[in-house]
Length: 155
Image (cartoon, rainbow, N blue to C red; front, top):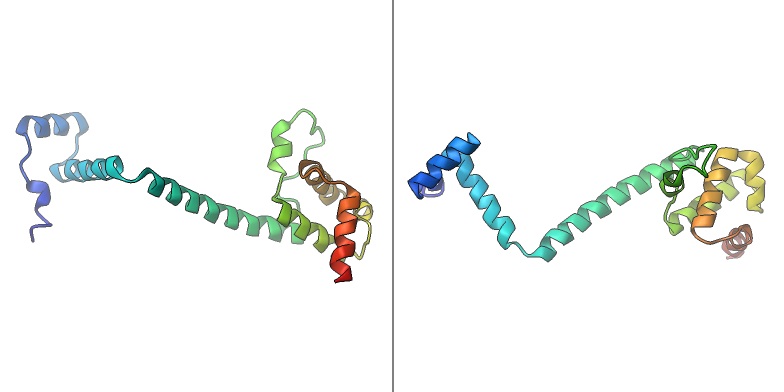
């Protein structure tokens, strides 16, 4: 019962009245806001950053699954523009993590039955442009991808 009436605890009456006038909040809302501020003020900074990091990782995992499904449907996540020299965000928007990039290159090579990544340009130009952007981003060349494919198939 004491927990339910905690917000009725009398504080400095002038502060309570002023807070209510300025904010339009009820006594309960003022009490809850004060509790929230106290928690935030005394919370370990690392706890907050770890929670934010976990939220970001959840978002990355969600987006990775989305990117993977689009690429498997022969769609790029965001289409590279025709005038990519003038759009620096276009390049950044089309970067995917290296492991996902390798997975998708190998998937396409298997899907299209090709042994040289250059052949992808004749199969799907949009996907090929997407892969060229990521090749440059990961500082790789087509020989690296072809070698990776050979290594995977020799196992």
